[in-house]
Length: 448
Image (tube, rainbow, N blue to C red; front, side, top):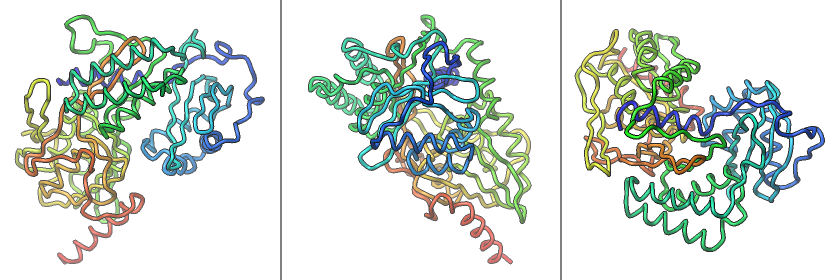
């Protein structure tokens, strides 16, 4: 998949989840204060969510996410919660012991969102909050039996066409069709809930965390025939989105004893975000050791993985390969021969911090450096997603992220799909930075 196709897929996924502005009066008129949270496992979880996100306290939001929805990016959730300034519960649309559907209004601009929340058997939660577009109604989220069947068949067709393992694609299709025949989806009448349910059931078979079905109340745009790249407007929007979050870079600083610390939460397209990455790496180029914090990194573009890695090697180095099923072609990823500014240098120690939330491109970066013995990995085993994904449109409201290729490390000839990357020093994620700094100090003491 070329660079612009990756941008298009990213834009589609962002659009599927982005909250959309609407005033309270456009959809409902009842007062939020009159709505009670159900006394059920799902209701108690929603109460915990509301308490955290209405607190205005980043620590409380982080604690809720880490305890109840650890698959989510903590920094993103904190930013979302603080920007929204809390929520009112406007209505309960569906009430089951372990499943709720509801409407929320944020305190910042009176925006409305339709939410679903499920409590899993292990006590964790899975929630989705989607914006309600202007002029829309809550009823517009509803889907009927014909729509469910069309989405199931459309999703299966996309999987059979492109999923990295054809035999697994067939098993996923057979399983979901059997569930539909047994009537397991008959009471799923909401598009968001249906997308979440299909995602769960496809993943039950494939165990592939990259595979997701998404629902968007607004209409998903179709690219003109023959157009594989996004339009100039889409690229401009992507650029604005990346600039608004500093391309995922959170912090670059010099710690005590000239130790560099770099935290970034995604690998964005280097065509847009390369200058930001170069600025961060150049700021840290003269440090004596570097700590790279990927504990909240959910992945992104393999070209950015190579771009940042180029600052850690003095010679051109083979990092990773990607094999694509449909073309049977393998693309090699190497460090760049040239970089903007100064490289860190081969002799300076690098430590990579990981958590169970480190995923996809974050795992590739970690695995590459581990296999090349260029970094010491400190923290938790990563999430286990080694298959690049491409967003594909099912119909005007549903899309599916199809993992279409697999990573092959040139040294180990394997990847981290389903297993994650094991750290060299295994500690709980919150302790990873302290541990890495201790290891750096110990190395210095040994040398002196």
